[in-house]
Length: 396
Image 1 (cartoon, rainbow, N blue to C red):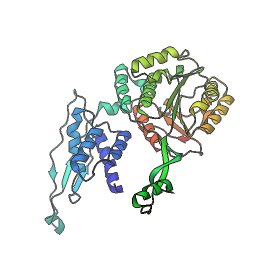
Image 2: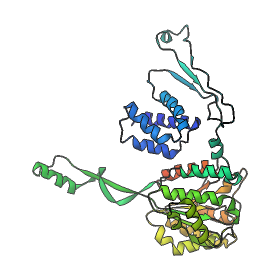
Image 3: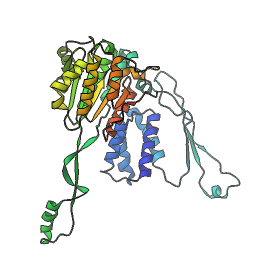
Image 4: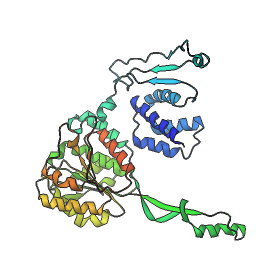
């Protein structure tokens, strides 16, 4: 697969998102992985693979078919896709504006090349809006019960994949290390004559993930949806995912979240946690994690996610020490703050000020779009950052 095809594939995903399909970076990565098992040149194989992985609602099928027809076109055809007003579907109650018919552009009179070539086709699509797109960018704290249920379903469909780490073991592959054992074994087929030199490459494994979530009173508006996010992430990833919550003290909730019934799992979490919506002591909770759980869950290059708004009533110096200790023992330390998506927010609380020097990535987690961005960032983690916090706001 060449770079031009990959570029066109990313544009194809962008087109589908603008048409209203729920195409996130995880599904596009699945499609790229599926191309290793099919012939890209076979239109039908690629069509059904893309349709299976990218379309999840029956009403999206006609939109996908039209977008695919544009994507899989002959290179000689001259297309001009104008994006004036391209959008998603409307609500069922709102009037839907039907797109105008295709218009064929007439060739210029003084252009000799255009007289022999086929006429250029200009496609104009009328833009509408989508409930799904509105929910993607709506703050969790501003949602009503019906919107929260819809977002929970969308969170459960997010695809998660954490970057892999390089281990000390090796496997057969196209690396630069000579695999003498396999080379000699295969040479027995030719009476000991070495005809092909075999090589090996480093073995990769996914990094463990640790989530430490704040469930204090200031986070109460976000806690329910964030627990759904943690449950969906744990169910989707193949590597170990350890989950902890804290308010005035730390509680491990990994075992209750292993239950397949989501409602029963969250009910058990509620019964296990005794300091729900209480005060906030981040430093004491991190100290308990570092001394009681750090050695058990932070091995093999773990990635740590701390979800908190930074409001702290504990010892600031203790928070600084424990954040520094936690950063030394993990591969990447990411702080997710739901207030970071609020316009005009500045990290001025004493808890955030104490934690920022030891944070690798400081990201918002206030809506579905921020969770999709987090999934993309986790997939692209490749090395440890030592340059301080990467400060990112929501662009919506």
